[in-house]
Length: 369
Image 1 (cartoon, helix red, strand yellow):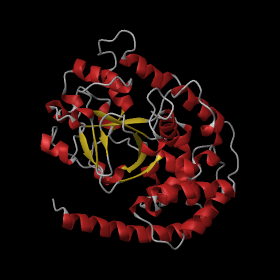
Image 2 (cartoon, one colour):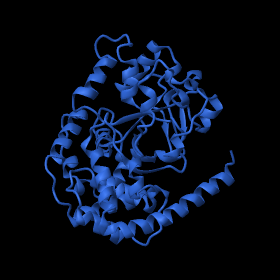
Image 3 (tube, rainbow, N blue to C red):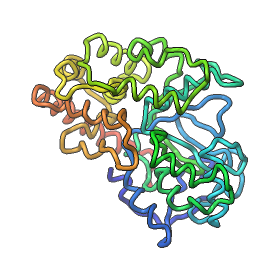
């Protein structure tokens, strides 16, 4: 998490930097006390869906807002430096999906369950997207600049009640996030953000073909009412009602999804993420044994870096989320780090640390500061 602990005096970026990817950090003022602590409450892994009809641009190298793609001058301006009313209007429109050319925000989620359901919803909405053209991105935030992301809850606390909307206001969104189950682990970046080397992606069709509905049959059930938020809440209620022992078939499917869709480098965290789509018992021997069988003695990528027990803080959850699928993920990782597989994990981590150091050295040589 060291990459986010550094500070920067830059509050805006030039158009050239936005076009190149760069980073427009969130830089709170003293009268915005909700934001500063929230900037340190960013999950290691975030997910995003992109399709031809979505706003902005998302590639393996960069994510850019609608305003940045259009080259608008205000794409250089931190939302926290804007007039409060203007910032509140933009935030409200963005969170409600009201398209505006001035929108300088891009959404990510800590919930794979939500992102998968959102991708599926895009195939049945009015003006549907083709599953082969919908891509799901996973991002490792540890290598990104500090203050690149902020939880939506921090901005809702800062600007709630400032916007001019009486009905469908920001205060209403904040109430939904805090008082109801309609919280989807949303995190925001702004302007242009370089994500090169920190992300992997797969199409929704690939994910379906590799067994999504075998692992989570509930996701394959008809959604005749084209529900999204209510559907996610129903999935949570159904998948996290009781804890069921993991089967070997589930592990095989999760591994096929992780490796087949996101590659060997991301296999471990994505396998854990897919297994976290439902409630699992603690100290699950099937999960620990599967890890030993599939990852022991192999050379993982930096995507696995930080899985050691003393590094599990990088996988912590936060009070503003309260999402069962997100809370399940570090528990799966902890099972991987159980006594039955500690020796295997130590071997994996030792190799990973060496690979990670080599990767950082190569970046420093190719892209000197």
